[in-house]
Image 1 (cartoon, rainbow, N blue to C red):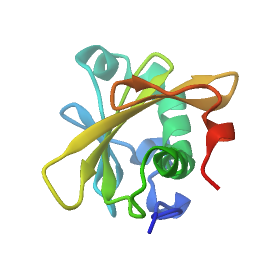
Image 2: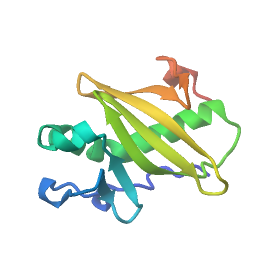
Image 3: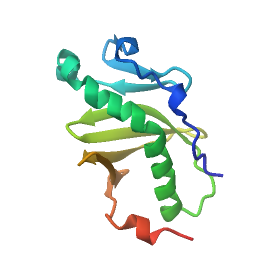
Length: 138
């Protein structure tokens, strides 16, 4: 059972004034305990990063669905027992850190934001081919 649409827009904090930094993290969903972790220089320049941070937050539900869609192409498992926990970003690259719900395991998925679109770039250290959508299992 894939867990499509488990993250809903209303479960995320969107208003800039409600996004607060606690040490080096911004809580973006209390319901799902998802945070954006920041490097020290990102904390210092947070004002200039808020527009991109809000883009990331808005994209989380769709990005998670795409992660699960790609998982279907690489696994015969019918479940996706992983939850998004921490988000990092470096330039236009956004790293989604997933933790297993069943065992001590975690992996990262990297998207890049180009031309106002999100592109799945890397899965757990492996490059994702640009054509992965056309190779999906039916």
